[in-house]
Image 1 (cartoon, helix red, strand yellow):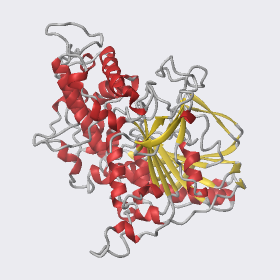
Image 2 (image 1 turned 30 degrees about the vertical axis):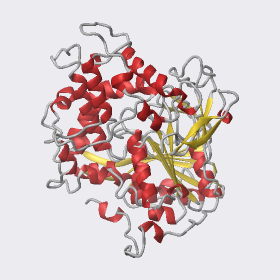
Image 3 (image 1 turned 90 degrees about the vertical axis):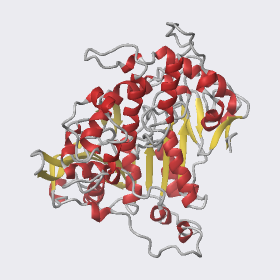
Amino acid sequence: MPLNAAFRTLPLVAACTTLLSSCASLGPAEPPRLGAARPGALQHCEDLAARAALPGLAFTKVSAEAAGEVAVGALRVAVPAHCLLQGKVDERKSPVDGATYAIGFEMRLPVQWNGRFFYQANGGLDGAVVPAVGGIGGGAPVTSALAMGFAVISSDAGHTGAQNPRFGLDPQARLDYGYNAVARLTPLGKQVIERAYGRGPDRAYIGGCSNGGRHAMVAAARLPQAYDGVLAGDPGFNLPKAAIGEMYGVQQMAKVAAAKTEAGLPDVQSAFTPAEMQGVARQVLARCDALDGLADGIVSDVKACQARFNLATDMPTCAAGSSARDGSCLSAPQKDALARLFAGPKDSSGKAIYSGFPFDSGISGANWRQWKFVNAQTLDPAASAFVFSTPPLNDRPGGLAYALAFDLDRDAPRIYATSGAFTESAISFMTPPNATRLDTLRDRGAKMMVYHGTSDPVFSSDDTQAWYEGLQKANAGKADAFARYFPVPGMNHCSGGPATDQFDMLSALVDWVEQGRAPAQVVASSRGTGSAVPNVEAPANWAPNRSRPLCPYPSVAVYQGGDAERAGSFACKASSVP
């Protein structure tokens, strides 16, 4: 039976009246300060299967692990001595598709504990239990939540098969993916911690990037009492809409594709060569790089850049009949297609379905191209058909054919639909309800930090910016007392691009929650030559350890003089655009 009713955001105790200018005024003038977590030591491990026996819970592995390294994808992550638990909860057989489902999870409990719980929200379509080490934000971070002493939990969000969308055929699996896995595992994780350490966690945090950022934002809205700190990176909180945006982009590029696939469909890869996208990025830099006081390959003032850069006039138009594909120019049809792609999808009446995207220096990045030219014709159509459409459109041709045939008037409304056993629409189970009304989170003293690469190709930083502006409006311009948004100039989806994309947002969040030190900036560095995982898209003329301040929106990093490679030479100041 769906568990959605138990986890809806609590209503306000009293309704706003006409005597109050906004509901935000119901909250305290100054949120309470949450105390610091107390350290502790692991008391139980191998016997936790018996000690932590809970309804619906089954452990598949419980073991003491020595300090060493854990493989996370292609990376080796250093971990301290800890207790490893793996298991599943709420195993069931679907009456719809006959498959067996359960919410799979992993917990890693350090022997030397800092008194904190961290929910590691994973990305994509989930479907795999990623090792529970706890990301701190940015590309190839130098530490992890587990290494910092957090007890960490990770989950497959209720289905198996990484990036396999077929779980969308089961109504409950959809809800588990959308919000219920986090809601189910949050109290369970805290109970396991209590049995392992002799007391529950003093402070709880949730964090992730991409769909993990969406999980975090959903938890902030649905579980405002559960987490003291929320860290959301490049959040796909409007994921069903973003998937439509990706397919819309495919349709625009198909119009100017220069070749066809073996199946006779437009080869969207041929619409724009890497050199052509690099050419557009160069023109963006030429117009916008110095807006922050220094031409350094980073467009810090992205908002001002949108007012200054004009694709039609700033990018040269190729002469009629020209075959140049070297990035020196674009044809008029290419310009039109790219302009439509960046403007975002609209239906035939002109109504926007998803946000547009800002022109930025990172649009030539490999990650940008992967999402726009590959994932947009594979992953997004699959997610749209099986998970976000109600009822599922699993009887249509998939992949590129699905993306090209997707009708924004006919098919886009399916993300709002319900049908039969599918009692919640994709918009209902995927997005945070009342995303700009976080009064309960605010009033209990919890804090929220959100970051987003301004060259993210799949989830628009403009969408996150609009969310934050709405949050400010709902809080009479004082949302920064509990929530701050940090754009990351040039960064692609969660990492990469010509950006200083290595940073530690988690430590800053802990300091804010537990010490009251609001983050005026977060210092980020470049992963140049010599880094553990170098960023190959960091320009060769940057210092290997270039650093920059990431500034809370709407401020931007402005050059003050001094060493151009050091964050200390910049200050967070108002944008040149009001």
